[in-house]
Length: 109
Length: 410
Image (cartoon, rainbow over all chains, first blue to last red; front, side):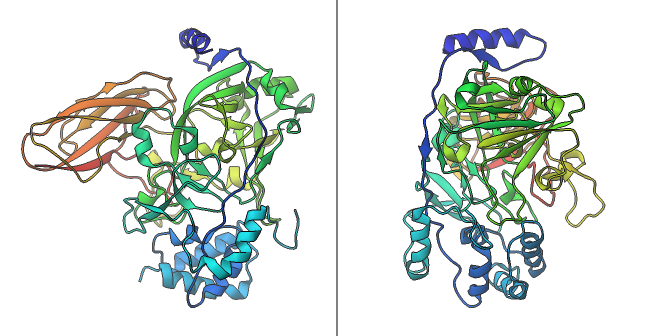
């Protein structure tokens, strides 16, 4: 197979518009079933309930913990983005608690 | 799959894990938290776990467990121009990803503004003319963690990229079997991943019809000679050579030919860049015209010398690395050992095709003790060279500044 590919690659390289090399040989695909690992840790500490209850349905806590320090305004914008753009089912009354928690553990002050 | 307000595609393990989380996860470290890696991200956090816990994957940098964001450990890029499938980076937008695929039942729909709606089996697709191309797949936000000011999002170092030899069929050949009607403007690809929340925007991307039919854009069923890992898009993913990976839709099951420009969130609103040179703007700047991200730009990296390394004076070190030209060939790669004041040409390795990584190497001998900054700069065959200033934009896209590596000579 590789010899065919090399030959055709040379041919197509000579053409005005380079196209992927073309080859003929069969390949069979096999069914797959995988299990993904557990989703990891939860948020902890004072005020973590609001974050655990509203944020972990869509993504694991590690995503947040790996973020750089951001201002409270930036965290507010992130929360709003999750709600407005990605339609996260966040209880509006929990938003201040979520932002306060994130600004505390990942804030710029 | 629908349960109340939130759809969950949990496996049995997930449910068990979830049930146990409150009780044990806080008290005991997860099994994958065995090794840590430092990513040199300014201001941190710079520590990540190495994980081997993902199916069909070897050791990966864990950026996010769900939906998976797995970064290729940078040393992998020193091993050759092709990134092994089991260490190829992984990025999913939504947590419902196809974890089971039956190759006998799988069908790819081709519909919309076509003469003949198709439902193609995998054997149907494998019977089409087979093509191969080596191409770099790079996340739009690769290296986002280096932007300053920092930006929320996947905090990647430089490992959200990989190069593979892709095997599959031309998207054009599939479209031609359906027969694209006059007036078609775009082709929209949808994968089997789904939003976790019912109203969340399903991940779809569109290409202009001429791009989709250019003969290079392909539907791949193999990478590096093997079927795709599930986390890289088994059984079929789009390959869009020279374009950022957001267009390389994974696990595609639906191709829709559009007679109107796509207005879905992921094509029109997300993944946009400032329409400025190097996609650069000032933080907080307003009124900037935004356009969909598109072609890649050149990059290059030293892969065998780490920042902070110590080398002996007057000893010749063969410095090597990888480069790619973005949307066209690598023309040259230059190396500087004086922080960019002077440059020497490097020797390029085997050419695997214009969209591939290409290795380069150059001998370096530093005469006197002290601190030096090695820099590497790729220029592509369109004359585009890596810039010496970092760009900034609100999504942290398209970083391609000349990389600098500090070494100490003793």
